[in-house]
Image (cartoon, rainbow, N blue to C red):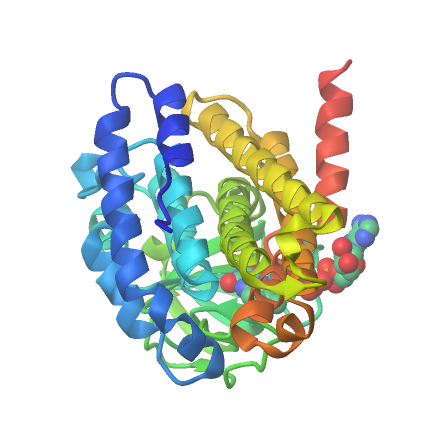
Length: 389
Ligand SMILES: Cc1cc2nc3c(=O)[nH]c(=O)nc-3n(C[C@H](O)[C@H](O)[C@H](O)COP(=O)(O)OP(=O)(O)OC[C@H]3O[C@@H](n4cnc5c(N)ncnc54)[C@H](O)[C@@H]3O)c2cc1C
């Protein structure tokens, strides 16, 4: 079954009348590439028998990361909803490659929105073309959701900042050539562009994970890392706000990624239910199995509509923080349920087949990363209570 389906095509038509054919061509060609080059590698990436570098580079060459960026910076200038859909497709092909790519592109969005002309000139094209892999370094060993209490510091002296501290659970760490580092100065949390390698920039080993095993996750240590003043992103003391803004966009994409994970688990479940026999019937004839299929499909469709709605609000320039969080909370929790039901439908084979339970293991990260469900529920309720005033 093709990853880019008639359902995606119809949604593009509804969202972008007049341009949908062009967008569908981009997406269907990317989907075909992912099916051929990434999907077959997925079991190996999960088992540690293949490196993410090759498939990620191939995606960069296909122009996936160019989609939402303006043509003046070398991008394709297409709507965010097209990019989010591409990440959904990649989530179906391999979730850990999708994680690495979406974090990379979140850094590019930060550069575009908050960088000055010379920072964009120096770094943006390299990042969106994939020449330079990017990493987002906010979480610390003792602070995640409460990122305002970060302990990493940046001290200004003689035209440069010196960064000391450490970051935890950082995707693409050790592989990236550019780190978006959040550190406290006298004025508060600030954001820096740190090139790698750099004296004093060190990495822990690749952390052992439940899922998303193709992507690299490490501790990052700064021991007197010196960054020139011109690599301060935006205004000093505004880093906390920039992190929030970058993460609002990233949450739409994470929701899309989860829809992609759920879709592939669903496809496998439908195929299995139609072939597995019990009590003289295929198990897809049993009502209780049909109920699972119906609920999985409904959840996937709802998750897709929620992330596309949030993406469209973003494209149209509205405040999309609540919509992005709603999409992420719903899609990540839906995905866990769908991948759990996929295991149930596969019975004992579900529990023992890496290539099936991998989807649940991959999905398990995303009610935690880039804003936990608990913290996002607080954000949604705060925003919605304010809107209701
Ligand atoms: C594989 C992986 C990749 C990651 N990649 C990156 C990356 O690239 N860059 C990066 O910066 N970070 C990354 N992270 C970190 C991730 O974003 C954090 O783990 C996440 O933000 C949660 O922070 P924490 O782990 O410190 O948990 P905590 O913030 O300590 O939360 C622990 C629990 O307490 C709950 N909690 C916290 N505050 C409240 C509250 N006020 N009310 C109710 N409940 C609350 C949380 O919801 C959670 O259930 C990654 C993590 C993993 C595991």
